[in-house]
Image (cartoon, rainbow, N blue to C red; front, top):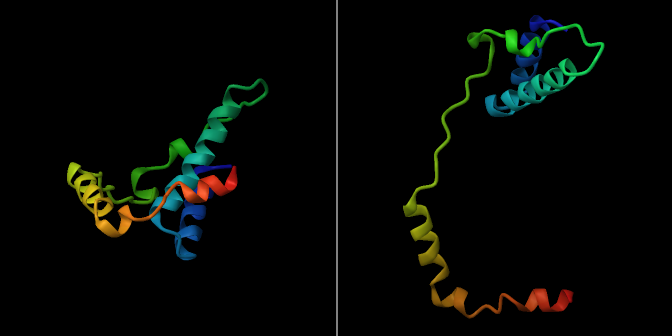
Amino acid sequence: MTPEDFVWLVGLLQAEGLSPATTSKVLSVASRVFRFSARRPGFAGSNPVSLLMLNERPTVAATTRLSVGAFVHADRLFATQSLKSINWWMPLGRLV
């Protein structure tokens, strides 16, 4: 396999509507397979994914991190009276 094969794969996955994050994960898995193979006897190739140029890789937007405010909001949600009245342990008791 060559880097051009992976450029083609990126184009195909994006044409099918997969997000850049999903396409990036596919490349990551392929790269790990080649890295694993490189440690085994008999593999004489290189990792074609690592040879991709930056403009050939999918551009993934930065992810948002959870802030303390998100946890405070969750605490307020669970502190409401309607959620306090639910017996959360009941479904678990039925499984035992």
